[in-house]
Length: 491
Image (cartoon, rainbow, N blue to C red; front, top):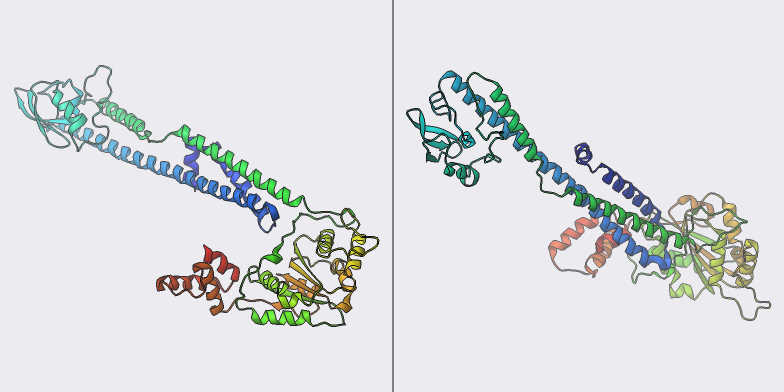
């Protein structure tokens, strides 16, 4: 906001806010790095750091709101002061005109009264005179009358203006400054008095307008402290990301990975009930469990993020009927980083070493990709395997896929099966051997059951009808996406 930015610089907070903005930008980059990353055992630490980070960003938002409040407060005060000054100047000029025209019967001084020596007369008009001397006067703000037979005014008049009168404008109790203490002089033949009075009132207005009740130093310190906290916490998140990447192995003989991902044991995250995917699940189970001798089946599951690809694969992977058909089941989280060495090592982790093997082959510490594949082929020989490749993005070079899956495909007669979950149809077309299972939005009835489960804790919720109506309005906006039902329902 241009006005706020300008005010921030004018108020002296420019450097503080620029440093805060810079830190918020860095936080944004760190958060982008977190998205889509698996953090394994570091999940609790990262969650705690991100929670603190979120609260600090709320605090930063509050600081901006606070600065804008002070800007508006100052603007209101200045507007009021300007209006008051203009009104006072107009009144003074009007009185001077009356004096010069001889119509100043109720002005605080004229030729018959002479010079009034007290500044308090600025706030009163003479209502009665005796032989050219004031006898009675009235407050120009509220009309209250006072008896006063001298040109010096009375203490009652001064007290009334300073503390009692409820109609006086702000600052009206403060007399105009004068080196002698006398009242401001307005004469019929001089314009210098007008100029002096107007200048004095303007100066007083400018001074009063800066009296906003806030501590600039304290606010500056708060901004600096917040900036420092943001810097420290984003540093903590960065360290967690480094720890997540340190566990990945790399090979000097193969293409280096741009980022390092840690294995996500997502195969164990299984929902108790499947909503609206029974037909797809039956199709997958039938295709992968029928033992064929004409090669390995590679079955892709394709759909947008959050549509339930991984959940469906988890349910198939853990289905008792599926378990009974395979000697070994392997779950690999692939993501965007295609690392053949990591994938092969993790496959070996799922396939235990046979005790009767001589010599015993161990894969720990081996840096040769070819040797690792040789060990994998020997361990899986005559074994039926189910391999799940979850969240696959790589669709650039099918030769790397062929090389990676060679040990499993070499035992094709055993009826091995590979399930692939991906958002990209190009991946399915490149490595799939069958038509992909395409997951779309859940049907309305199934989606409503799933949403009620997460929102109310019961898919058969029949409580407050108003809440159900609101829930259905929300559910309609989520377009049948299961992940949206879970996250929004819980919220």
